Image 1 (cartoon, rainbow, N blue to C red):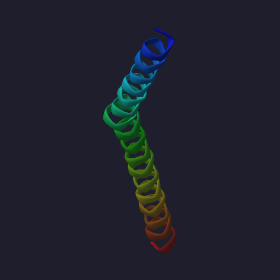
Image 2: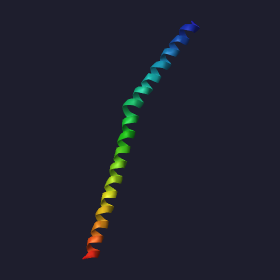
Image 3: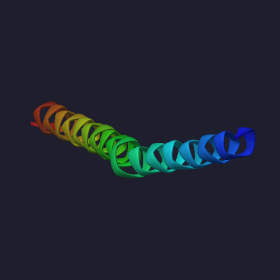
Image 4: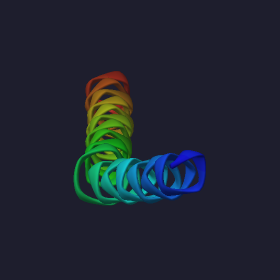
Length: 63
């Protein structure tokens, strides 16, 4: 009886660990990748705005 319970517990543990792996693979990792992409896009947009600002100041300064 104890060995059956132990086997059942082991199977349940492997099922839950598989469910956790699926959750991580399907939700956590894509969310992290999306946040990194968003952060990278925001940084690029900020750099572009800084370049445009510098070019505008340079154009006004030279005229």
